[in-house]
Picture (tube, rainbow over the protein chains, first blue to last red):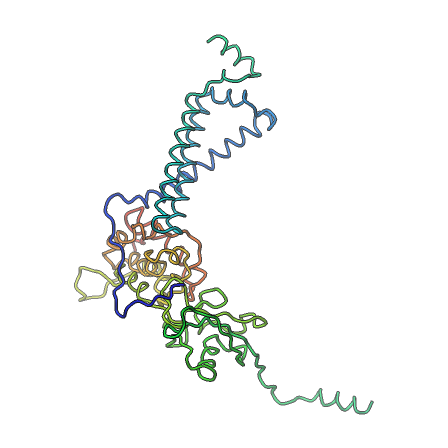
Amino acid sequence: MSTDIAAPRSPYTREPKRNGVNLEKWGWVYMRVSGVLLVVLIFGHLFYNLIFPGKVSILDWAFVAGKLADPFWVVWDTLLLWLALIHGANGMRTLANDYAHGRFRSVLLWALGATTVVLIVLGTLVLTTFDPCLGETNNAELIASCAAQ
Amino acid sequence: MAGAATLEAVDNTPTAEAPIQAFTVTLIIRRYDPEKDAEPYWQDFDVELFATDRVLDALHKIKWEQDGSLTFRRSCAHGICGSDAMRINGRNRLACKTLIKDLDISKPIYVEAIKGLPLEKDLIVDMEPFFQSYREIQPFLIASDKPEKERIQSVAQRERFDDTTKCILCAACTSSCPVFWTDGQYFGPAAIVNAHRFIFDSRDEAANVRLDILNDKEGVWRCRTTFNCSEACPRGIEVTKAIAEVKAAVLRGKPDIPKA
């Protein structure tokens, strides 16, 4: 609790309103829209990976390789990656805005942005350039197609 | 044996009205005198109170009978003027509407000034940042037609903003908001509630001006819907709902007011 007493009648001032695009509004909208999409994407991901085709035990390199050979799952995972990372980063940004001040806030926001960009770039790189022949695979179909290349 | 029988007989006869039971209640109050103290400190007082007394009565008893230097604001003492919002047992309440019987008097009652506004003395804070935000949302009717005849409004249109007309500007909501605690630039629930009162008034013509003011980094988007404000409001205003309605109005570009 502040114990500083301001000089009598010193006017209270608000920081001038900044012009330009209102990112707060679109950030708020993004959280709602991506949140709804993420519910579908995440539960679809969990359901397909852990329950639907077999059970957790089939989750190995071959399973992931098989999934990433299907453009449907590449698009699914790319959407999941981008939406979830930006959603999480935006949430962390609001926390930093709420609870950090001054230079510390700038450092936090900068680190947060950099981390998010690196993770998105790396993740997208893996999703788009994934090579199933890199590792051993139990999937006969994949071994055949790898050998054919 | 004879004595016991006599006693029983006496017990059964109707007696005079029993005196109303009084309780000794301990209040621990956060004191601060800027002329003497470097930091606020907690001080406890024992007060004789009835169950029907209010926390304000306890403060009065302390000020009148024990320590005249205890400083707090109160005016009407009946929950209308909004002067005596304070933090009672960690919750923002009006001292004049908090009955002793509703508190657990087996433990001390903690009373301190509302948080997030500069502390001036004991239970008094500087309300200027709060009223500055209130002034900025232009809390008055803005209409272009001359006030020559009544501005007709349907029952449904009046009902639309009825909840937010109840505000008494006590600052219980704004000073319970965790975003406001850490960032005094946030307009706060009370300013948004009072903007809502005019934004959703069918007679008002400046909804867009107020929506533009609140569509700001420090406006409605800072609300994290923690519902502290709704819980704190002594008038039972659904504050968080009002803020959500203003958010929706900003997104739509106009408020959702019944046509008639």
